[in-house]
Image (cartoon, rainbow, N blue to C red; front, side):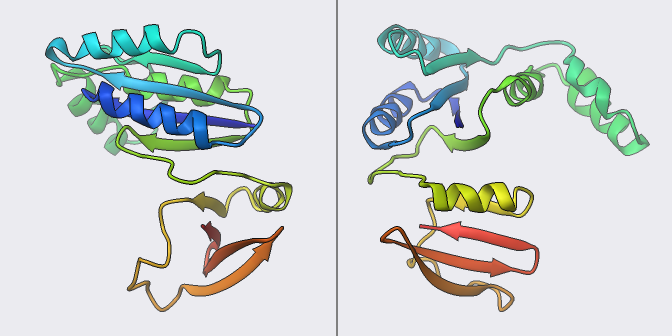
Length: 188
């Protein structure tokens, strides 16, 4: 059902804590977590320990970004001069280019899951996450205009005038619904 991609850079300890909260709080029957990480210096040693620690969890995997001279995923973007110039600047002329783009595209292309969630390594799940059938049906009915954000709540003020706040109760869970001109976003 869910592919959870965690982006991480030199923060193995934070990833470890995030993974522990995911294992305790993510109440979704079918999910995979992929840590897409990059390191400098001795930080690779921390990720090596994490790979060893989580090797018995079949739904957790680690993918390391590597420096490359040429990332072939950019070839598909040659549909305008602007994109070609971006490719030259960010790929061919950049001595510190890496394969992030192709790794991410491959993860998204090859997933068996219907939904994708992105996290950064400093995130924490402090409450249970349950995606029931009512919420999932909203995704399936409006795949291009619906997203689910767990980090925005009543503590955020100052939304633009074109965002209308509503409250709904789905299976006993209070959900804040903010309607935009382009679609629907669900907030816990």
